[in-house]
Length: 449
Image 1 (cartoon, helix red, strand yellow):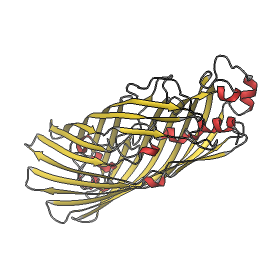
Image 2 (cartoon, rainbow, N blue to C red):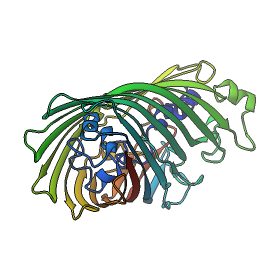
Image 3 (cartoon, rainbow, N blue to C red):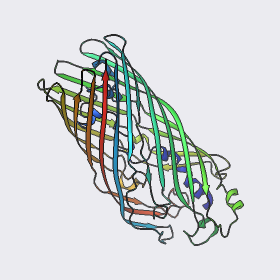
Image 4 (cartoon, rainbow, N blue to C red):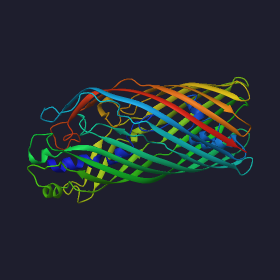
């Protein structure tokens, strides 16, 4: 494969990764912030019980624990700090890629909303509708940073629309299901070294490629609860795997002056606006939770979930003829691994009006050091959470929650070979360390009648 074709493919290979690769607060690129009340206990026991219908995101059978009309809405403000230091960037020939060896916060704070509504068709049959943002948050780097060929901007927007049904079989068993329609829109950009086309000094003619993509996909969530005694509840949840068929477009920003090669020649080699498609394999998630009432005031909860991130073993991208005429498909190895999340929490009902929550959680990383990228510099996370709920009336309640995520420093060690088929051949080697911290502040309300 020629160098210019490899350079073009490099820009487009990331179209699908852009759709699901920003900073996130769960393993891989998931967002857990779907229930303010559950966040207060680090989502412990959310598959078994919930203070409001927002828990149906994790287990749709939880709707049977409520009656009448129910409405819930909330939002989580995620303040993330991801700073890069000790950077080293070199090309295949060993020359240094220019740029500061450190970078300030590349994460952009974001707001994650959620909404839910439920109607009791009967005492046992519940109908609901949930709106959630399961993936998201942007990252952005300075245009001159040394890792600019690996990434500049990543911006993701997703929405899940989920009509839901739940049925109480008897006093012990309930089941539920949601049909999920997911929409995603993404924007990705990275620098391109056009000097490589003309044999000039590398880094002297930087341009940029911007990729946008969107997709709809459909799946299901299933769940069941079992209550063997009045004090003890168990719950299981399942989120189906999805394969997102991302359709994208690429637009090139050329250097102000192209030396050594005419613009028409550059465009004829494939560096012109065009399209590409990719299938992204998203994981299935299995969860199990319990809730035990020690007495009328004090409850303990636990949760464990497993996400099959090993499905994301490769990224296969196909391109339109006008973009990459000499190679219409490329494959990038990802080699992610399955992850487990565990948490323990407690709820204290201090009075009829006030409820307090606390919890600890541990979330594995799906990415090893060798495959971590500037777009996903995540690592294992330890959750410490607190929350409170206050009933303003019999109909209206409010909840708040705060979580701090302790994240060890993340090592970045991307290396390339001298083979032009290597995905990082034109991006170069990049190493460094990320110092990451996350604070999440959430607030929500519940209304019922």
